[in-house]
Length: 446
Image (cartoon, rainbow, N blue to C red; front, side, top):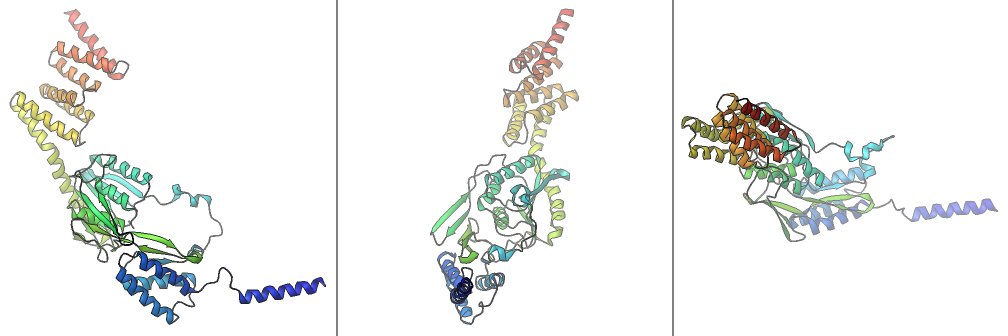
């Protein structure tokens, strides 16, 4: 009896299985129709969306997509979508399980961000004080903005900067705009992003950065056919504002911000919902790519950039320091007239405001003149340092030493005491006390 009931149950289940599709069963055309609806509602160009959907309707009637596996469907549909729109950002994706074959063993660390490829592949100072930055992509988190700050801090002393975008596939517009902002002082509108679905325009202005801006440093950007999306945005923006020389190959040609839309059964579609509008050109690089200023094979672009950067770095350095050198020379020739002292101070002040020089570097400059027995010039430099950094005990200590070398003990004592007051328990204060003891001992001996 039990066996008979069991057999009947099997027959009923088998019958239901034949008549009722399981949750995993679907028709490819149903998925495509979902994608069509989203495309017409969201794609940046409505006319192209309608033309593409009409093309897909014809293919569905022919049964073109009927027997395709999820992976083959994704590949075929992406090709057909791009055939009409020519938009490389427009992509259809299969369920994750159909995209990548699962490995038998998967390490737990494979899921941790710390072990994924970093945004910043590397950076260094090359020969002739040329900075080099290699960016893999533009991440969209605060952590990624902090990495931009980190590398730009290291680039503060560079006299030219090469930014490698040859293997950069894009990323978040906010991070692109943030890096761009490091190269502009003025608050200008760099790009606008218009969304058709929302009928809204977002403006991307130069923003404040957590670091030192480099509005005049020569910049070279390396590109290849793999340079895409956000990397093209950065390159195009810098080029349009004459802030960089582009060297390499014509880029991929993807200018539309994209949003991912999930579909039934694990499928999905990335739809470009907006378009970038450059403030200078009133257009973008969609479909045509960024055109290099110097077109050449990508593999040779770095060496070409180095060659050009060496010359421009020298010019940039001279533009910074030649005026100071002239002011110091005039000070020497005219025996320290007050107007010439003011010129030296003005040039030092300009370099400090541009974050080219700091208290320590000015102090080093003063000691170079002191060691060359040009103590009066050193004193002018040290005096400027105290005006620019009045809270620095070290600056006052150095000024005191210059007065001592010029045998003005009264002023030396005054400024040594000032240094002690500012740094009573530190090394500068200890040095100042030691010098005061020597001065006192000499006075008593006499």
